[in-house]
Structure formats: C-alpha cells, structure tokens
Image (cartoon, rainbow, N blue to C red):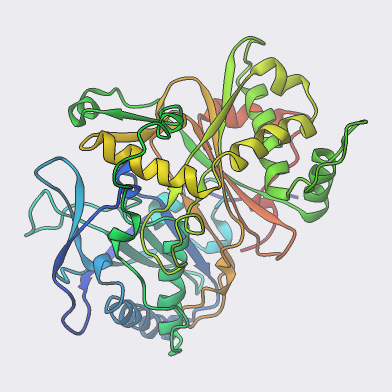
Length: 459
C-alpha cells in the first residue's frame, strides 16, 4: 500500500548567517575555463535526508555542519566567492572570502510524510535559492548557498545549491566529501583541489578544421540573444527507483544480438538504461514516425585532458545523436543501445575534447550552449552519477536515509540523472526532469519499469 504523503508543507527561515574561511584565503579573480563557458547559468540543488537527530542534539549538529563548512572553505576558497559578469560578458568568480549564505530553517512536517518523488514540491522548499545578498552588489551572486531544515520528527534535511558554471558532478562530490569528513573530525582524504584554468588551454595555433565536429553539438550566440530568448516550456522533476533485477533485464535486452556478431564489449547498464529511457520518452511525446528525436550523453573529459580527479570546475561535454522516431519506437533496445554507444565512443577521446576547447576559443566571447540543451524538438539528456557514493556523506548524524537532486535546468530537452540507490550496488535512483505531460504519459506506459521512490520506504 502506498503511504499517504503531502506536499503542501511550510518551511520557516529561522536564521541566516554568512560562513567564511576562518583564515585569510587567496584573493583573486578566477576566470572560467573554456569548458566552464559552455555551461548555462543554472543552479542544481542537492539534498540529503537524515533521520534520528534528536531535538537536544540539533543545535550542536547545525553548528558542527557550519563549522565544517568554514574549514573546507580554506581549500575550496572560490566556493566562498561571488559570481560576476566581466566586461566582455563572460562569467568569473571574485574570490575574497565573501562567504557562503547559510540558512537555518524549521518545518512542522515529518520526513516520513513528505513525497521526495516530487522534488519540485518538496526539495524546492528544502534547497536554498542563490541570489544577491543584502548589502552586496546586485551583480554579485554567491557560488554556493546552504540550508539546514529541522523537521518536527527528529530529522534534518541539508540542501545545497551550486552555480553549475563552477562545478560538475565530480567537483561537487569532492567538495561534499571534504565537508562531511570535516564534520566528522576526519582528515580529508581529498587531495587539495586544483583551480588552475590554464590546464584547459586551447592549442596554438587552433585546429580550426577539427572544430567543425563541435559545431554539430554546440552553438554560439551573442550574449544579447539570451535576453531575447523566450523562456522554455515549464518542466517538473520526479524521482524513481530502478531495482537490480530489472536493471539486469534491461542490460540483457541491450545485449541481444539476434544473429549479429557479439559486441567486443557488452553494453553497459548505463547504455541500456539510457536506451530504454529514450524509447519511453519518444513514445510519451507521441512523435510521428518521421519526426527526429535526440539523445545527449554528458561525457567527463578529465582523463582525455590529462586532468587529475581533484580538478575543480567543469570538464563536461554533451554530444548527441539524432534518429527518426520510427527507429527509436520500433527497433529493439539493442539497436538503440548501439546509437547511445556511438554518442559516447565518438566523444570520449582526447581529440574531441581538445577540439571542444579550440572551438570555444574560436567563438568567444559569446554565449555557448549545447544544441541538445537549447534547440527545439524532441530531446533527452541522460547523465550518470551512479558512481558518486551519496550514502557515504555523513555530517556526524549518520548516513543519509535518502539523497538526490533538484535540477530545474531551464533547457528545452528532458533531463535524466542516474544516481546511487540507498539499496546499494545494482540499484539506481533515477531523477527525471521534463514536461509534466511527458512524465504522466511515461508513467502510464505499460512498459514503464521504474517506481516512484516514495513507494520504497526509504525515509
């Protein structure tokens, strides 16, 4: 039986403070790398749900989280900075230990009564908004904002909101790991973060012939064009669970060759799930056979640019492939998985990422966006964060009962994030953000295999 939940709960802001590094940090202006410049101005939210924090321990816990945040800002000093737009229209971070806004909040709701499968109504209230602070320039926006909400059941929700132009998934993982280890009084096992943007320099001279492939995946616009762009259609988020046996079934379907030679490397779980999502997404949109539909797969470029995992910034490209809806709707998962694999294999290499960096250099200054994100038409982007160990992030009150994202990304495409599950290896949490009508249609599809996380009794 599905438990009763409610979303019309109130959150009261009790106190707001600014958390700074306790010691002086480097004062500088950190410019965006060429890859940072291709990331739109969006603010993904991360939330961590913790149960069993007793009333008498709450204030001590909140103080510990705040103190640990100040400690990690010594190393992660740009996180305490402010985003500004430079004279040429490009974003950069003023680093002067301005501090992170830290909100303490309270709610009369109990964690068990909330429906985290609908983050647009729950997580949206439990993650802070980034905006210029009183007394500061209206053109300066904090890189990070934090909110700790005390629930009436003896639990807390820690919500964080980063500027995506500063971090990708690996960067945020490194930050959260260092922060939670500091809260436990542990020495951080993370190597000192690297902010050296010169590590992503273009070639000299630019390889102008090789950048043409990037033209197919990215677009460059005058900054003024963004001001004239109509807002995209409204989207909402929902969070689902995919259990291990079903995931293995999807992977088996992706590897059915039907007389064809076996692939040198079997299709991965990520390739299988992405293919399945593309199929149900295209079906939900009721596309005509001749209509095109796209899938984008974010690729991490650290290995291809010889960057350490500790590099802090964006090293993500979003290539895509396009196919007629007829093919995606009628062909088996194994055929679609071949397309997904080609998206990845065509971009997961040094030449692609060097060409990406060169392409940005050739176009700047300009607003640069992934075509699959910004152009009209049927499209879904599937990102994988399954290897990020969310359930190791312990602020001193135990491991989270549940954790996910709230990612109102502002693009025209649907967005899907594959994440670790509280049940461990072989299971996935699947965050989906797209038009509500598409999500409704997907849920009523008789072949839909996911279940909303509120039915899993995780919290």
